[in-house]
Picture (cartoon, rainbow, N blue to C red):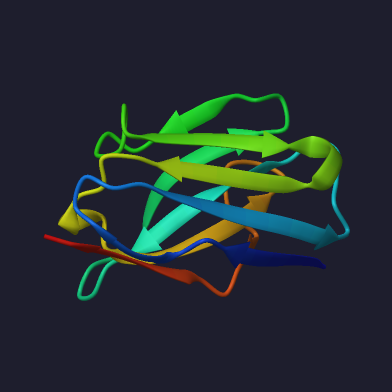
Amino acid sequence: QVQLVESGGGLVQAGGSLRLSCAASGSIFSINAMGWYRQAPGKERESVALITSGDRTIYADSVKGRFTISRDNAKNTVFLQMNSLKPEDTAVYYCVYGLTYRPEYWGQGTQVTVSS
């Protein structure tokens, strides 16, 4: 079992920045992938950014150039730096963990609200 605890969500004005953090604990394998999904009201859950333990990254087209994912392998923690936020970035953001890019564990979610 893997537990994921997110932090860093909140309310920000358009153009502002937020940084999300997610700490993983439990049965963590040295080779894994962590990242972030989001779900806006009335929309399907979508992948935002993923990073492997070897620091390979994948971003959704909608966040490229604005969001940066990083990780601290020693602390099993992943970060999402979100800059130039837009109202359409408003969603619940979920931290994910898996042995591949396919999520196997999900965090409880943290709300990000961007006001116009």
